[in-house]
Amino acid sequence: MTAEATVRKGRKYDQVLEGAREVFLRDGFEGSSVDDIARQSGVSKATLYSYFPDKRLLFMEVASAQCRHQAEEAQTTLDMSQPPHIVLTQVGHTFLNFIYSEIGQRIFRICVAESDRFPELGREFYQSGPLIVHRAIKEYLSISQERGELRIDDLNLAADQFVELCKADLHPKLIFGIQTCFSEVEIGRIVDGAVSTFMARYGT
Image 1 (spheres, rainbow, N blue to C red):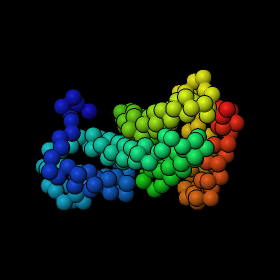
Image 2 (cartoon, helix red, strand yellow):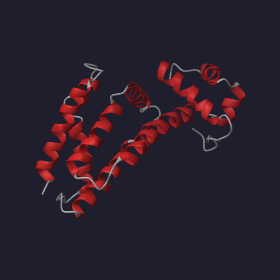
Image 3 (cartoon, one colour):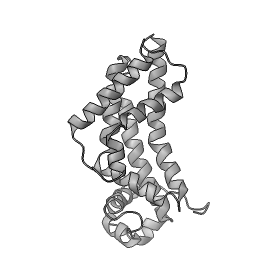
């Protein structure tokens, strides 16, 4: 990707982004053509290229926009005044419902599939989603600790540990293609276990 390849926002930017999202999720990165994206978006190829001169740049924008939306939506619904077992349960459900959703699975697979050739895709995916979630959890843990509800020496590690606890059992099944659809009962079981384990380690 060249230094000149940058996003230019304009009147049809959202229209192009939505069309590209549909095509990428349907056909993957490699299987998506600029012609298909332009057609789905209802714009000319010239218009598409005026916004996104590089297909990788367009995919990064689609993936990061979706991840940012999910992460920021989760942040705005968090009530930092609530105790850990309530907030962490909510965080766990929000996190798993996204990564196990159809769009979450497809974005993850495309980023992993293309990460060797285009490492910037993986970095962008991490920074626009998982890193935002990590920071939100860390911020809450710090606030909760100040209230005397938790006792944590390493907030960064604790935030990562909670996320990994939420990946128990179901995530390996997703990665290896054993299971791709997860019920609320299955997700609830994992989240409840993650919160209980976390509180047993860090709760006061």
